Length: 178
Image (cartoon, rainbow, N blue to C red):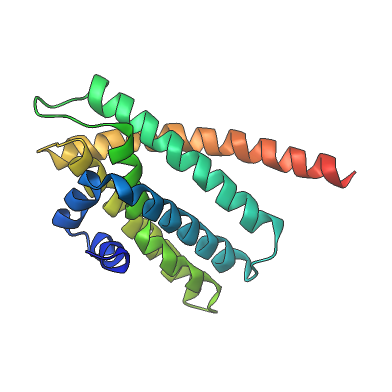
């Protein structure tokens, strides 16, 4: 399956695509491209410009959070909430979680007057649904509810980390200006 087919399949929430991505160790670079593209789209959708510091900060933060989310999901999913068949590694989670960001590319339409906000929110919710599927598949869960709980726990941790890192980046940017 090609990279675009994988991205579309992940956006279509196809379980078989997430299974293929999980197993393909060469797909980590593709997942990285999805994470960057999704967050560039989000930044542009919110600011209507590619050349602003917030867009670049968003992408840097997204890359850090992608890795952090994969590691925290690994720890929570494998050691705190495993099912008997759970077998995974951080690479599998990086790949599946990265591809779960595929619907986020639509967030670029956030800049469209009147409907942009709705498109932005809908694509973000779509990403969260994809994230649950990605986590369920990477952790070999039979239970979607367990994947939702893992996603909520690691998501809350991620939001706290994003706020801390974002504040540090903002502080660093202000220090450079003065």
